[in-house]
Amino acid sequence: MDEKRKQLQEWISESQNIVFFGGAGVSTESGIPDFRSVDGLYNQQYAYLPETILSHTFFQKNPEEFYRFYHNKMLFPNAKPNAAHLKLAELEQAGKLTAVVTQNIDGLHQAAGSVNVYELHGSVHRNYCMKCHQFYDLDFMMEQEGVPHCPVCGGMIKPDVVLYEESLDQETIEGAVLAISRADMLIIGGTSLAVYPAAGLIRYYRGSKLTLINKSPTPYDKEADLVIAGPIGEILGAVTV
Ligand SMILES: [Zn+2]
Image (tube, rainbow, N blue to C red):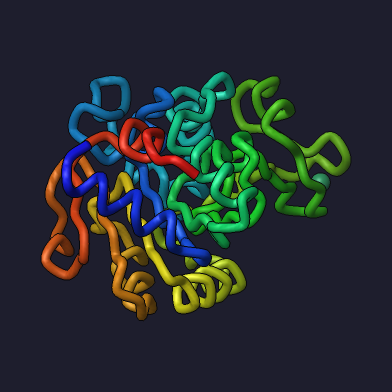
């Protein structure tokens, strides 16, 4: 084991209040592409950028095209948790990890067994009727063709995910802030920290074990106490709880 991984293991072993903050890189190892990355979802199938299609305005103006993209590029019902998801769930069950804060909407942390998960950008597993607020799960959405409508009232169904131009859920943000401010170790993985509100949130951490695990450098490498370059699943998966 190299020095950095040894340090990671030591800190995890001695910490009792770990918070994990994760981004798209956590899910790419489960086969879910990052729609922002160049080798991710950019291709010739759509006349608009993903950021345009996934905006509130676009959803309202052109729900047919939104849902065509959403079904093809955002839903991965067969994706399975990877070693990172599983290790984090294990750490929570062992009473060492208090929260996972994620920018991902795929629900893989819960699928791995994590309980206290703050989903900053919502979840594809929750969908609601914009008229009567009835909730629908991912299975229901997978069966729909085109724009899904509520079987109860006929209203249009919207995924409970935060689109561009929309604000984040206040309770989720507050929960994440509180967890991070109380953490004795903060592990940030699979994110370049470029996406709002990641950078703002990590400022609430007051400890001295800020660990960054990412394949490529981030603007926050200098502020971190430990930086490990590599795939998150392999690195966390090797940790002993
Ligand atoms: Zn309805």
